[in-house]
Amino acid sequence: MNNKTAKFLPFSAVNQWMRPDYREGVVLTVLHSLTSLDNPQRAEVQKLIKQHVKVPGFRNSAQAPVGVLLRPTIAGFEKHAQLTAAILSAWSHILKDLRQKVYQLLLDRGWELLPPEADRTRLPGFLTSWPKKEDFEVINQAMAEQYPQETFVTDDVSLMAVWLSGRIPLDLEEE
Image (cartoon, rainbow, N blue to C red; front, side, top):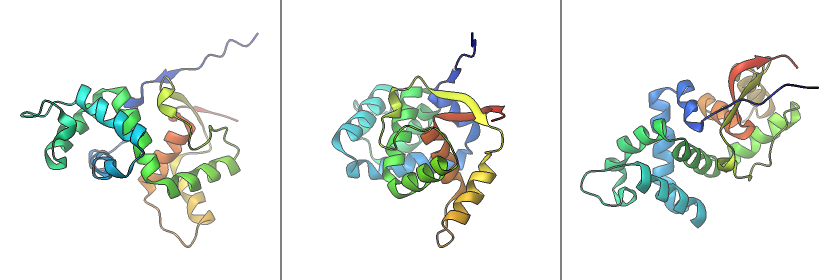
């Protein structure tokens, strides 16, 4: 009998792998692009901002200007797993082209993935297992080789790999 069980970390655990300036960029990208998202996704982000982010002078924090909303939203992103998941989901939709390319790259490398459009916010968090030979450097190098005519932000590729795989590189595993 196989006693192997899956371990999950809350979505907010991704903050341990993100530099503060990069986290700010991800949140800012989503806040600036909220109006371009599909209504259900935009509504979910706004609902969670209203629920978890407090901006002085605003009953509904989601209505605050981006400049005022940014810092409190970053703080909420660091603490509240649901808000983290909603922002990462929105971010992956905003970077749809990158999402598709990273998805295809991971599939080609033998990763088992949900479809790119799947609602990963419904998962309990990130799995903690990660293929030992697939570190971020290897994945970014593979992206550069597969798409030599394009330049990618390495942090974006790494975060997209985490989001699409639903995994955080905590427990490195042999194949």
